[in-house]
Length: 66
Image (cartoon, rainbow, N blue to C red; front, side):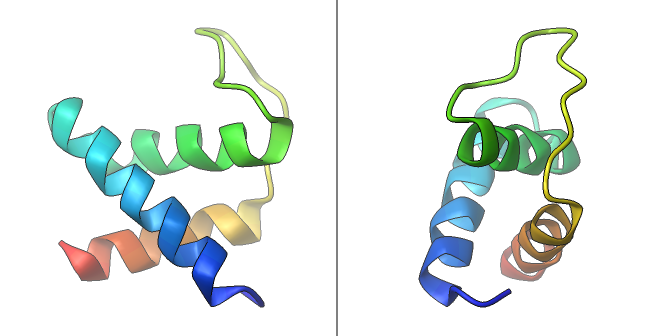
């Protein structure tokens, strides 16, 4: 991950979303990265690709921050 500030912003958003979604951290990280990548929140059946490397970096950092 080349931009630590972006990573921290996405981690913070993921943790906020996870807290309000009953602790679904993986899903929250995916949603935040999807929104960053595509510019919009995913719909219920959205299967568009996301940056998997970014997703894993956000997920790992969010897990560490819990």
